[in-house]
Length: 318
Image 1: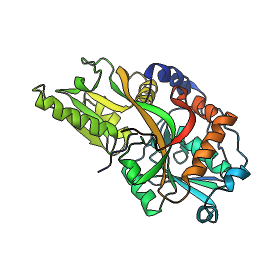
Image 2: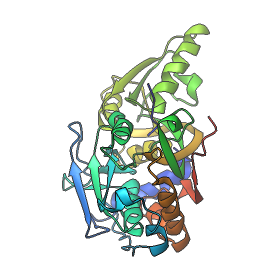
Image 3: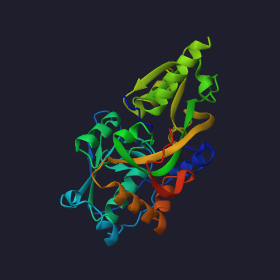
């Protein structure tokens, strides 16, 4: 089974995200041609106020539009799948319907540059890559970590650098720092993530070393994983580090970060292999980096520490 990471330097992320949490609520649309479908049954609605920054609508870039495959261009719409339970990357706005976040804004802007309408679809995380393979979705933008194993079934346009981090209930007795600190403890993760794989692999290493196993509790979405920590079922939560930072910053003091983020790796936009969309999407991301809109999106969501200076394809080394 392929696992799909849903990370980076916590100290920079938490400071920026703390600002997001206190901004006046406002949900701005980036495109009059954007539609959002909320279909995942496990989604919960965020109550966090949204940033007020508006990302400017992009004009279609004729040079890049000319590279979009006819099969995609004729349909006119890029259907993008996101698991909207993972703020600040992708989550449901207070209206209970609209998908917002870094990946949502970036997907909107990419489609505009490509001369396409965009349809954002809320999908259970573990179903997105199979949906891309079957043709149900044209792109996956859901905090996927690019790995060599996943490149066997999809192509990636890498647009972000992320890591992994821990968070615990405030006032708890245990500090976690690095995977080895999980020995003998219970950890909460979202199903189908690199964090799940890493925790389970570490559990085997802990048992082999006689240091106590790792009990890994898996949940269908990040909200459920957070509840396991706040309720005491799990001692520590484990997520991509900018997401862990957001969870802490918007928890009202329920959670605190624990330890130092680790395992920096590229996030990639997942695309069907061989359908000709990888090069146009890469060009669109690089165009947005060049005109400053990419930086505006990263800053809006407080995740600029993970920004890249150019988009690569399939750049994973492991």
